[in-house]
Length: 408
Ligand SMILES: NC(=O)c1ccc[n+]([C@@H]2O[C@H](COP(=O)([O-])OP(=O)(O)OC[C@H]3O[C@@H](n4cnc5c(N)ncnc54)[C@H](OP(=O)(O)O)[C@@H]3O)[C@@H](O)[C@H]2O)c1
Image (cartoon, rainbow, N blue to C red):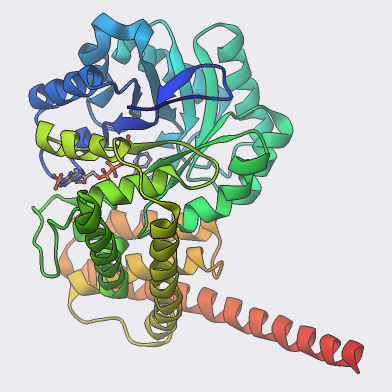
């Protein structure tokens, strides 16, 4: 294992272990066997463990697993999500949630307290005040941010001292990381990449047509849908080919790739059993020559270029076309449309959040009612996307006119 001293002043293992699976997102999870995997990870040199107040019983399970070695590990947990996909980063909520997390984790301090998601209704200054108070009281040692729009991250940097930024980072999903990369390189923030195996996609154990359990979030995950899944599997093939030539598996190359990205201090993975843990940690044991990485980057860039165009086309088709008549397909298309539109800055984070909350809330309703709500949502999203497109093309037109005047 390799280690890195964070700018917050303490050291973490470069591969950390996350507890998201305990929330049941990847299907049912057994706490006892997860405790064994967490302890095994520590034995193998992992000193960085991540959880969240919204990952089911994960804080309690993690607290129990590391109780004997508490002062030798770094614990990160998160705050900011409220019931029903709501957000709450108010001072009152942050302080109360921290007390609950300390109790769940059975510890006196949290090493890194992360703002899990943005709460657009609370001024950043208020949240920062609460975090700084917790720091002064010794209840947290540092704080960081995750899933926040870039502009919001900059606001946090103006008012306070966030020391880490969490972002999705895999060879198949780089968008969040690229949004923050320069902050990691030159603005005194440590980037922590998560989902480095692309939630299992880069392991080679998931192919087209793979079926997940009924409650598995990957059933609606955009990375596992349409051209994004096809592209991710092509990425996996590239990594597998390189791995085969250098005695590594595709997922080991994937994790090694994430670890070498500029500004990245550590990455988080969430293996569920000792075999997968062993495989993932093996990413730290081999070094690939720079020339090999250059070939990998070239191959990934080609896949990214084609994917970007294809996703944009699909968003346009989904926005202007009719919603699929089959409800589950319509549901997945709407998730894809919301996530794609926000990625390409066609709708705001707040609009996306509202749409997503509405989409999830209708899931339990009767079929007819669900279809009606999805149609209304589709209409709203279409209007937002079309409006953004019109505005962008007008801007592009006037810019090219200016260019021609100047160059003339
Ligand atoms: N995902 C997020 O939105 C998010 C956000 C913020 C922070 N985090 C933190 O980052 C941590 C890591 O993210 P993640 O859990 O998404 O990481 P991940 O390692 O990309 O995905 C975990 C899933 O990938 C599969 N997997 C991992 N290693 C494998 C291997 N060697 N062979 C086969 N399958 C393997 C497992 O699937 P099966 O369950 O099918 O075995 C596992 O449940 C989280 O636990 C959490 O603490 C995550």
